[in-house]
Length: 250
Image 1 (cartoon, rainbow, N blue to C red):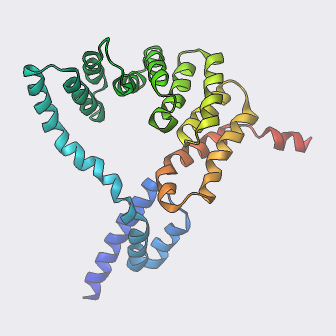
Image 2: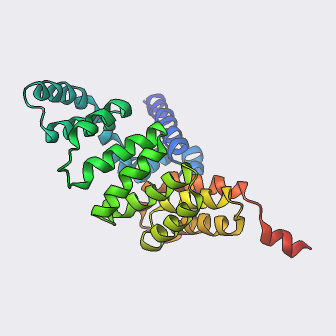
Image 3: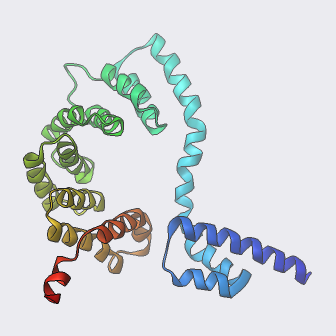
């Protein structure tokens, strides 16, 4: 029986280590997993992995998305209404079919479209496809309808699209506006990258620092969602020269 429990403990440790490597929570958890054996791994899985079950939800949604896409394609044959094309486009974009989704958004958007959502969806597809100039045009339409669309994310992506399409002066102004109104880590990170590319290293360090400072203040559930941006900010910070340290050493 002890051998069986030991075997289960090893399995729990393997699962715990895999989760730790993928999600990279605090380092002390790795020691608890390795030193604490099966019990330590179980404690980790309950404390850290169990709350991450929300990450599995998109996988279950994806399983049923293919059937819904096929259904909507059939519906459109009989009723090619803009609303049906918009729903199909959303499904295709969630499924990673960005080119086909953009074509569906094209059909969903008419001269009478006043809703920001299809323009935003098409802009997201354009960004994923690397068509930044097209994304700029659609995001301008979105922001004209609602300047705070998607909780300020649209404004941040507009600045990113301007930067990626080589419109640096407009991008700088757009980033300043969006970061003044929004605290989204995605926008702050994109701004830090933009500043780095412009050779404005001290400002880039300041913005990466703002992202990493959130670790100390965010509640645990939000900290989980922000981990990818924490990792990206930490990686960017390593690339940036520490001009303050260099100046102090002279």
